[in-house]
Length: 553
Image 1 (cartoon, rainbow, N blue to C red):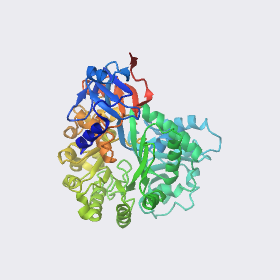
Image 2 (cartoon, helix red, strand yellow):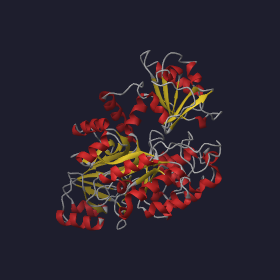
Image 3 (cartoon, helix red, strand yellow):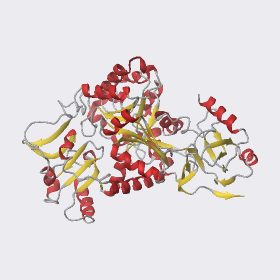
Image 4 (cartoon, one colour):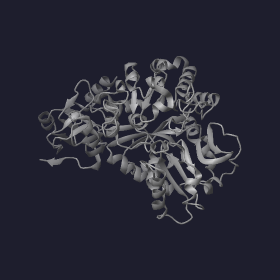
């Protein structure tokens, strides 16, 4: 299909199609099997690629075009993060950043520094703590925060966003008494002697929703701007934004209308809310500028492994009697999936544990029926712990596995303790999915993980931390090649958003979206990949970050 489209475009444009710009003296990796590598790319004023080839050939073919000398830089198809949270990233940059804290004392130090910048009565909001990185490796308590902030409410999301740590002043603002032995559907209140200890898991976090300060549209615009700068600086030309409310989409539309959306956002509606209702009523949304669309819905079936909320078929190996949480009841989940299918909306579901993944597979199979053979491109987000017998079902149902390589390298120090050695056979099993011919779309799940796709590429090919540990990689048989990893962050992500005719490769007819690197990752030792430099990020032929070579006569 792609080759036919390209041929048609070339016929329409003619072989002497005009080019506004020719980039030459580059190492271009096209991801086009017909021409995997090139030295030059030409695109027109609309930001469409019109030719790919050798330096001399393109300079001769387009003598009047502006010429840019790339100085030997490496040009990849624009890298796309197939699973992130753009507003969450922006807000995390405005709130207390707790990632990388090695103890509760470090958390308190960062909170004190953040509090000094705010009004004395403002809530302290933060994100990024992970008890697995602390010496005691157990959930913190409200008392840990009360000592430093006895009167000021404090609310801190765990790094994965599936648990929150609150102090007594914040817990007291819940409209419901959090004591006793009851539990909310799809969540868990951690308690000691019948009293809330300070940690709320998954749906239990909603018990404080009404009390938490809500960002208004102005604050959201500020947060989006910060997020865009960070994403572009990391070489990303697009993001699949996993869970966007109708109100947040309205802010994104305003930014797109004003020409202030510098990268592509593939937004997913936030479960069965107003955004999905609008898609069902008005049809799938696409902004005329080509950088914003919503045609998918993001659902949840379970929680996260780090907070023991991922739904497992058997008990947690380090918590007898606990099999995790179903944050959406199976019948309710099926109802929403049916609704999305009837509306022609792509379904993408968060599933971490082996039980969670199996429930999603079973539901997709039932709802799709014979349509499973069609081009629906439904997705499972994360697919972290999967029964190996279920991996083939992804291919049978023509699903996309949307996975995040840095989750493996973040979780590897404690994942075996959670699920035991046997269940690791299907843990972060990228190679098994590739061998089963399941399309991969790769991302980071920022702000859970760092934004950098270079870190994702490194994690995918090494399964090691930045110190090169463990030696040989964690579960090394599941590593990807660098070519497979780059494809997952480009062509694979483009396919997952129905945009393979426009994005993900450097071929005539595609949009001129590029990630430009100083060094060639295919010639670097793996340890050099995360230290490579983003020279420029290019969207629609426009440099939206960095510098893009030198003008040449």
